[in-house]
Amino acid sequence: MFLDILISILWSISPFGEAKVGIPYAILNGVNIYLAFALCFVANVLIFPIMSFFLEVVNRYFMKWYHYKKAAIFVGRRAKAGAGKNVEKYGFWGLMIFVLIPLPGTGVYAGTIAGYLFGLDRKKAFLANTIGIFFSCVIVWVTTVLATGGFN
Image 1 (cartoon, helix red, strand yellow):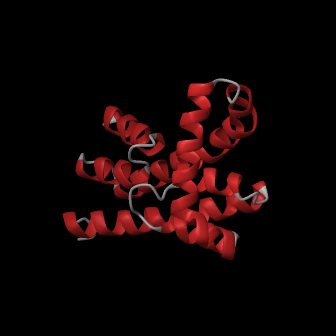
Image 2 (tube, helix red, strand yellow):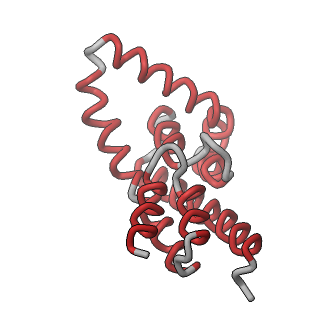
């Protein structure tokens, strides 16, 4: 049980799945549905401050190196292309809707990068990401619980 909780938390902080994978993993492995939601949501929210620190401090330092800069520009362009028009036009609301959609590439990692690239206020970007993550988690959680017959 503890191992299943740990793995679901790790999935929730992973850029390869986030809570979109962590919640179903936990529920399908017998973790309490409410505990699964809470832990995966909190783990997913914790990504924002880590990514913000990375973008503001570490990223600036590593931009000196060609290969890192090339990879960072590639990732930045992808995040900007995915969230671009909505975040640029609607700001807070566009970022929230972008993060809310439970599809690959629309989570808090891309949302944090998009907020950074478009110069959104850090507090507003955090709030938009948190609200988006919450509703994304609710969608995934309800879908998983209904698919497994967990509300009976």
